Structures are given as structure tokens and as C-alpha cells.
Image (cartoon, rainbow, N blue to C red; front, side, top):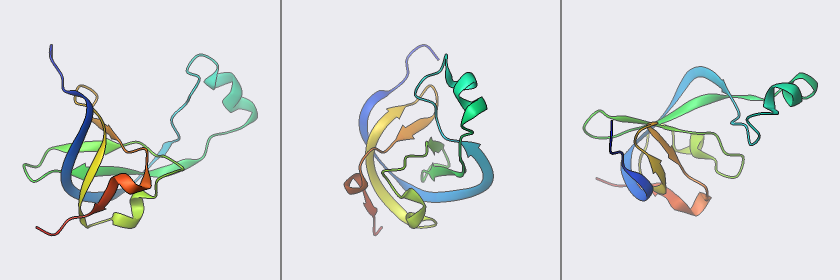
Length: 101
């Protein structure tokens, strides 16, 4: 894709917590392998937002936002969208709430 949506946006969809485990994202990509040797990263279930059109956006783990509490509920969420990477980062608990259709 040449042009991808990026920036703060609001999305509507259903939160799904998958059984696949993934490691916490790294803040230091170059040193992460060395640091991980001494302090292994925790793993978490992958969380996705399934939009009404079937498109999915991965929601990276954040220790500051409990996204899993919305599993199987329709939500409206505001966060940082990276359409090229198909990720949607929610950084504040107040930025997500259930949504009645």
C-alpha cells in the first residue's frame, strides 16, 4: 500500500481475545534481545477489534488499558491507527467504552 491511514481515529467493532500468545511490545528495538536475555518479557493473549465489514485490527498490549474486559462486546474506541500495520493502539482506559448498536 502506498497510502495508509495513520493518526488518531475512532473505530467501532467487537473486541475478541484470541488464544494465541504474544510478547509485550519492546520500547528499545536494538537492545531488546540483549535485555530479554536477562529479563524475559511477559506474554499476553492477542486482542483484535473486528469491524462490521470483517476487517480486523490488532490492538497491542498495554499495561495501562484493560482491553480484555471488553471481550465479545461491541465497543467504540479512540486510538492511534496504523492501517499499513493493521494495528490500533489504545493508550487510555477512558478511550474505550461499550457501544449499543
